[in-house]
Length: 59
Ligand code: SF4
Ligand code: SF4
Image (cartoon, rainbow, N blue to C red; front, top):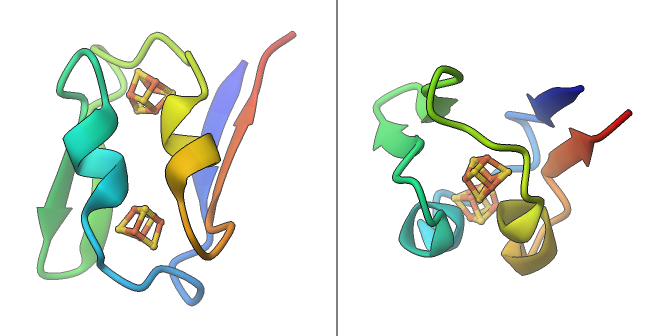
């Protein structure tokens, strides 16, 4: 199980931060960071990302 971001694709729109139900995401100077201890890999952020920068894999 994993969460990945392609930083070069990220537009810094903040959509993923807004929808995360457990507030795992944060927009920092270097881009989006995931506080993995909170992330439940629900995949919502992946669905709302306009640029396809986020990939969530559940196994
Ligand atoms: S997969 Fe779900 S819990 Fe994890 S960062 Fe994305 S929206 Fe938040
Ligand atoms: S939704 Fe996608 S493009 Fe927008 S800040 Fe998050 S990762 Fe970047």
